[in-house]
Structures are given as C-alpha cells and as structure tokens.
Length: 175
Image (cartoon, rainbow, N blue to C red; front, side, top):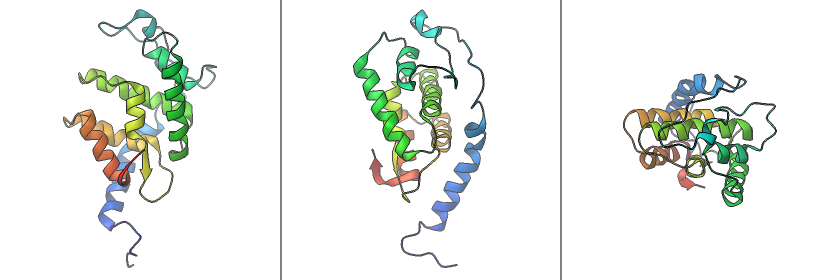
C-alpha cells in the first residue's frame, strides 16, 4: 500500500503502535482500584498525605480540587481554576475522563518528585496536552507511559515532555 502525502510515514506509525502497546498496562491498570492512603513524603504537609492517592469513581470532589488538595495546598481558587481549564483542554484531546486524567497526572507528579525533579500538576498537565498529529483523540495513558519511559532513561521533565510532543503531536504542537 502506498503512503499518501498526508499520512504519517510508516516508521512514525510503528513507533506510535509500539508506544501504544507498551502503555497498555498503564492504561488498563488501576482504573477502579480503591484509594490508597500514602505516607507523607519528607517535608510534605501531613494534610496532603491524608488525601487518597487515587481519585475514586464515587468521590464527589472535582478532579482539579483533588489535585490541589493532594499537593498539600489549602483551597487555592486560582490554582484550581488553572487545573480545571487544563483538564477541560485535555478532555478535548484525550479519550480519558477528567477523573482518570487527574489520577494519571498525580502518578506523574509523584514520579517527578521521586526523581528529584518536582513538578506541579498544572505544569505536567500543560506539557503533556498536545495537539494530536493526525487530529485524532489520544489516550493519555499511552502518552503518560511514553513520558515515564523517557524519565526512567534519565530524561528531565522538559526533555521527556518535548519528546512526547514530537512523537504524538504536530511539530511544535504543544497546547
């Protein structure tokens, strides 16, 4: 079959498929797992540790409010509004629900902290919300898994986010 000028080159499709297959376990795991309380991280507000590590289906808090509380911040309307706007934008790009987006963002925020490169939730969300290369909606779990693998290979947040934008987004297509 011939590639049309508008179709991505075959290596791009193979890389995308490989990334999708590699991310499948992350995309499928934990969607309905019960919340787990976690111990406070060094220097972390104890109140943040009492917030469930996973936003459950029946939780009545908005995903943005949960992310703010999880970060140890008291009610912060500006931050919550930024997260709400980011989740709304991500909802247009990704198939995932806002709850699942918030859970994945929380996992990535924890990963960054564990790597000694703490990032706020709104930064991670903004940096990984890309304009899809083919105008198709994406699965955030696939994008997140690609980011995780790049971080595990020693990449910084900025490097991993840029690579994800190049792989999944239009050239320079960060939103």
